[in-house]
Amino acid sequence: LILSHTALSDRPSPWTRLITSDHARAIASIGGVVGIWPVQQVANVSSYAEAIARMVDVIGVDHVGIGTDQLGLLGPSSLPSYADLPQLAAALQAKFNAADVAKLLGGNYRRVFEACLA
Image 1 (cartoon, rainbow, N blue to C red):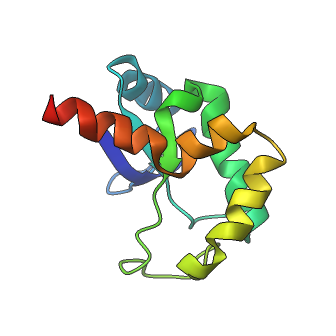
Image 2 (image 1 turned 90 degrees about the vertical axis):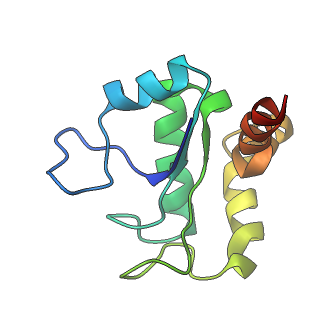
């Protein structure tokens, strides 16, 4: 299961993409991936990396990815362009080792995709 773009919230309101920690743990418990959305209170690429790290703290690095939805955002993005992905990678490298950054930037999605093809 992939929840493609969301973020953590202690009390998500109805009709929101935000999820609780328990919801995120349920997705991780079946091997899924939660993609972190670059909106909400996320101001820039560094804070986007922090939001990703918060989700990693909750469900582990094997179950988190980016969830940009660049073409579908209704407001500003902390990752204004895919050209900013190197900045995100650098911000994540300050928090994670190279193997974990690779998981976060697509490796975890690839694992789920490959499992679906098996």
